[in-house]
Length: 229
Image (cartoon, rainbow, N blue to C red):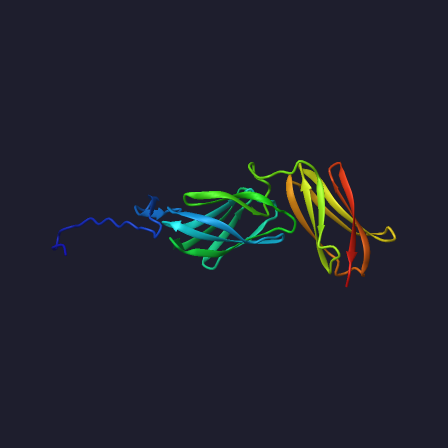
């Protein structure tokens, strides 16, 4: 204790569980963005819903950043984390309780009704490519020609169109009944080069045969669908 009339100067420095960051304006230390390494794994695949887990290998981490995602992508955060979508720049997950070495955090979620590609993730000193509602990254596989696969077929009540697009193209799917009447039109907009999975639901249609015409750029193909209820 100082004696009467004496003064003492104290310096208080704050440390986060992930180590110290840059010196803050108030003289303490800002929260470090994470000093560890991790793996980031796909748990469930969409579209529309994709979920991931992060396992911390060394150090500790309190932030995950996703880039190269499709416009319109929404995100959900694990318990104890928050998520912010910064336009088309990045999706950032942040927590005030960092995960340490050996911990696995689940519940990182992305959602988009049609997008299916590869993008980038980063956390601490780690990063890489991840599949999700993301445009195809520079190093991802790009098809050399258009192709369409429909599965399952016959179906009840939902099937999928797997579309290979070698270059960005305006894409749509037209579904006709056996009498040639248009029963569904799906305008998918301009889809990036890559592989895309589009879901088609027939819950509101009667059983029977249908014909689906897939158009993407100059490419078009017709496929027979069998809806069985």
